[in-house]
Image (cartoon, rainbow, N blue to C red; front, side):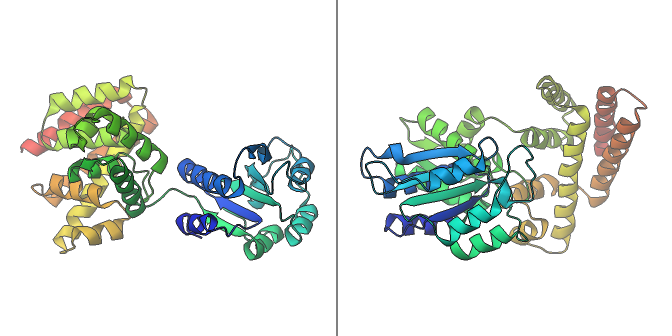
Length: 345
């Protein structure tokens, strides 16, 4: 079930005795935790809230806590982190008593709200998982897609009476792209909090503000590197490459991500020749729309054959780095010079 729909139900007083939250998004986990706390406790009853780690504590202790009546209150809220026993993950040091949990699920203590959390996907073949899917509420707290991320960011901006330039919002989204069209919501909201503090007087966020405040990912730095390369700015490209290495990144990783970036440029170039719109490209390539737009703008004036030559150069680089025919840093620097020579022909 969608977390926002479930939170609305909780706020209306519809609380289930057992929840399973699946995913790794910290912000969403905290959001469901806060909603349940507010619904379960009216005052100083948080003594009835407990968090247990299933990787560290005996399963019998978890069940003992679940079957304990609340102290001076009507509800007891228990969060069980790392509920590996619902997944295919093996944790040998802690024994799991499946039948005990099955008995509890079939007849839960109604004064207890028991929440299992796992970053791993549920193992649908397990008997216990099949039962939970029938009798518990399953909540998805995995990283959000682009549309949801923008919604959360825009909601926070409205709450703080802030405005943001479209390019600034696009860049903030891009800097929190985890690939495969999933985004780091927790980090994005943290970045936005810093920007709100940074621009507290103006209450307007521009693209240069995002560039000044938000930490750049390796992927974004390499996007800048590809931009310098395609523009033939050798000095700037070599300078940025040196800065990336000073941050502790491996040359072979830089080459691999640059190769992935040029592959995207090639794909966008081919799709644009076929008459695809940007939205269609984003869907086909499973890449966020702003990244596709940047790739389209970058490659507009370059021929497909030239992009293929650059791609081949980086493929050859990858091979030479892996077999160790030449020192990796020197090899990459030489390849930058070769690529810019091709651009000038």
